[in-house]
Image (cartoon, rainbow, N blue to C red; front, side):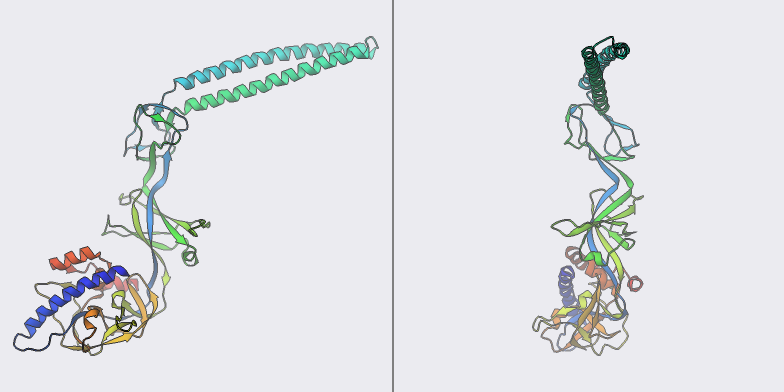
Length: 436
């Protein structure tokens, strides 16, 4: 969780400034020592939602790329980017003169072969009648065997010539069909209904089979593709709920489910592809967009839950643990906003102890741990100020929603909010309660 560590460094600076401000206000009449000022939240008991955060790529529903099937100059382009087309609508017209000439040549060749076949058939019919007459004479011993063999040889040759003529007709008909198909390909039509995009075609260009002309897809339905590793296939399956996020629509979360998972792993990467069908009536998802996808695949065992920012690796001992406020027993309303000009109150000096913890379950925002009890207050911001102190600090009780929002913010956005004095949580505790 490199991101929230960066965030907490910024917040530590903020707390130092606010702590000094509070100390000046609280100790204007005495010279008591300035103690570290930290923020803390109350640990909870529950189960963590298990989720896998992945990156996804958006494509339009039934998205296809349009390529010409023949090479020819472009004479007319009938659609533009953003236009909606129906299946069968004409998109591009290519120059057809050469293909019309080839079709006429193929049709002429077909007629020649048909005429030859008629000649061969007439010759075969004539020899057939002659063979029958000769056979009658042979039955009455009026002609020799040699004469009979000669007429049979002539018949066999005529029959073979006729079969060759028929084969040439079939070949010529196939050529006509190919040329007619090629002529038809001079008119490029939409294979599906959808919206046209990525137009890369102009009149006068030479179209060829390697150049994409358009992309067409249904923007009302989108598909998000994510890559799953071999290990993920052990716990991610079709039907599981997913949440789709993007910086382009920060206030909206799209909920869907895993629709399909390919059973074949790619050689080398040992990963496979999962597809998520998403209704896109609001057109939030655009083809080619990168999105963040959280796949929800279950819940952890019951444990004490703390924010990830509460888990701290002690720089001197290397032990992973959390700072716990031992005597923080009085009631203080957790804050969801810090105004630099009028900061919320801090507690009286409170004993804070570093306690080793073991992470038994880890989510995207919080972790289940042992070593901390339910409802103990754990420091989430300012742990580095505690290193080398005498174990006392002034504490500001913070709402879960506030610390979770700060964990999810980018460092530059967080610093901007801090400098503006407008660091307000975008979530409240009820949001987190629903996720437990």
